[in-house]
Image (cartoon, rainbow, N blue to C red):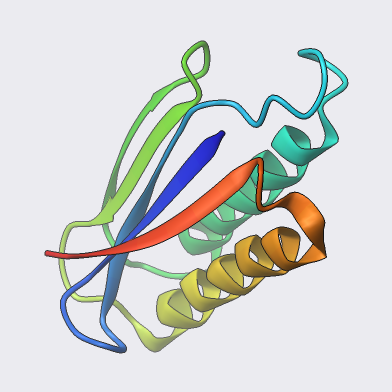
Length: 109
């Protein structure tokens, strides 16, 4: 199961996210749930890097399915929109019948 944790310091103040695990929907290389989460995750990080000046830290391990993304300072409205889009995408995947493969949680930081 892919565990997604969204970090926040208040209702609208999202500070980053952490993902761990693999979906287990199918064999490695053909797991469409894992691929979907990966696309959402990498596109969010790449978009924040390309379209904002916000600073962040990134820790990842491709083999274990771990990634941690955290803002280092203030979060711009553009980054907030992109993170909210990421959360919407993850929740949409869960609601589409993937609740056995993805779980989302929120953690106050």
